[in-house]
Image 1 (cartoon, rainbow, N blue to C red):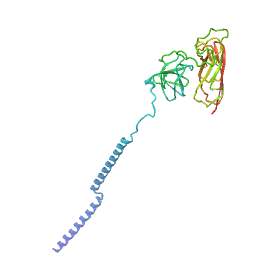
Image 2 (cartoon, one colour):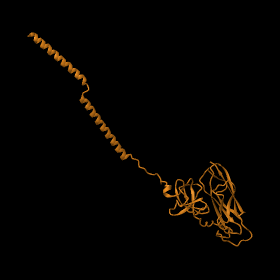
Image 3 (cartoon, rainbow, N blue to C red):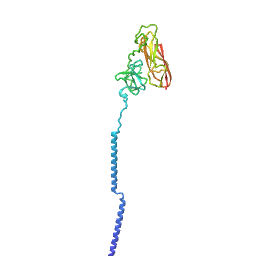
Image 4 (cartoon, helix red, strand yellow):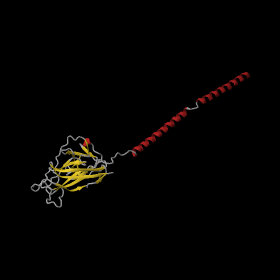
Length: 297
């Protein structure tokens, strides 16, 4: 019986030891408990939600406060397709009452502005546009500095109106008005002389300077009045500082003055420039005009 008790006690110790060993092994395998994993996932999900919420809030603030406002700093250039044929100019250009320098200046077109073209002159060297300075009125712009945009093939051709009355006669002139009518011609023929000029010969300009007008005022010293398109001024020699080789002189009475305005194009290279023009009636040279400038930086 005692022997049985010892056996029973020994078995009890063995069983307890085995259970204790099994418990230790289970604790090692559960080093990362399931509940901890759940807690970590929950924390990650919460953090992700917070980050997403913050980003959403930042995006909302950017939409509310940082969306740029698209606005033009100036008047946009109109579309050539939508508005028809148009021009722009590279330099300031006079706008006149007719397609020639003899007509009065009534405005001007500046670089960076597009102008819709309504018609052309017979030579296609001038464009008929709305006056940039006076809405509702129209004038002619010389095409030397112009760039065309759009289709010009369908534009009408406008015939120029009558040339303006020439300027004030000289103080010694016996005829007050400079018109095509005058005294009955005698044998003295066609003669002219230079009365005034602006700018003076030898004036200095910078290379490529924006042009201005060369103004010659000539006097009809002959006994024949000059009819419209009867007398012309033609380039003879030197450097042509203008846009064409010949221009008509306005109709002018005997002893009266005619004003000739030529658009002056300043060369882009420094140097001395001169030109000679002849005032002619047919093949007859009535007088000679010369002009010279200096171009320096």
